[in-house]
Image (cartoon, rainbow, N blue to C red; front, side, top):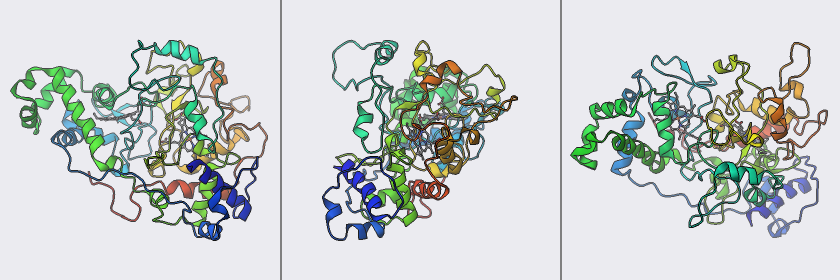
Length: 465
Ligand code: HEC
Ligand code: HEC
């Protein structure tokens, strides 16, 4: 079992003294550790239990996906004529933003600031639909229960403490899960695409009719007639739907959105060695007494060899500091409450969900210059400092108010503070406790996070725009 292998890995490090790890409870040692040479393999940075990952072989793109590719890069669909999907989701930046602005500008003059950080579009191909409670599964004939009811029912259920060493727990949790956008408000990539296309501070497409007219005038217009028949331009709604479906096929089919070509993937398969720092970082990532990152950013392949994508797709309120650089935050009464609004409205009555956002993948995170839904941080050092200090030494994370007091959790109204995760490590500390990581351990953790960048061994692996 992968989980046990990992547990053992942590243990070996403790036993070997390779890192000064203090484990809270004794953990059973499984078979391979006892085998001669196991600690030698670890010291050499090899994966003692290599696995075969199932990574789909690249296939030529379908006609639909090729059409979608043209649309993805087409700036003419925006009101400014300057913004395409690729402007914000830049292929040279792992389909995330290219700069370090907390939000990207769009709208008619490309001067309207967005309200949230641009997420990467990578590894979304199997994103589960949004749901609350136990996975409904595929073939349930029962009438669907409304989300607010599910949320209310889940309210009384005991929440499970998530640790990297028991990720099965995380799967059984009743917290909301899945969907797209930071608040999970869209279920399919296709519904999702309509958002930015029409949003006044993104592509500002105006209306379906305006976008349809632009598609008809686009250099690839003939492809629509070839694929959908001569009447397609008479049916504007259908035309725009098909265009967005094509963009989705592009994201699903093109391997550049999910190459699984990181050093960590190579290491999992026994094709690469981690450096000592990366190995120590990997252990910290999984140690509940240290980072415990793997509890939410799952790092183990599935039994069928599906590579890990470093998220459990669950929502959490981390209590991040407010980002004063966001124009929208000039209004002190404005709060981005994630699951309970303002950009999704169906759960606004469920106060227990306020402040929760979707856990993103960590693949290629080291390439990003904006982190978290509000873009408050700009490098991994700041991110790791947040996880290390937000509870133990909050004065390092939150600003001080006029009265000199540290303004804890200042991006969430006080009545929702109970939603902030104070049970899962590393947040299960008390103010004044020693931070979980020292400087060297933070560096090691960052070294490990960098092994999640795609393009290992191929310096030119990033696609050209
Ligand atoms: C002006 C910048 C901008 C443009 C242009 C843009 N997006 Fe986005 N995109 C964003 C932002 C910001 C978010 C996050 C919004 C949120 O969570 O509310 C996002 C989210 C997404 C997501 C969800 C990702 C996730 O992790 O949940 C997808 C998919 C996506 N965009 C696809 C597209 C497509 C396809 C286009 C072109 C039709 C496009 N975007 C154009 C800024 C942009
Ligand atoms: C309890 C679950 C949980 C744990 C444990 C956790 N994270 Fe996260 N992580 C999240 C959630 C949720 C977000 C998004 C929060 C938001 O934007 O409001 C996030 C966001 C991030 C991001 C930003 C990615 C991006 O695209 O903006 C990074 C980097 C990150 N986490 C790294 C880590 C590291 C390193 C650790 C261990 C020290 C860790 N996380 C532990 C849930 C968790």
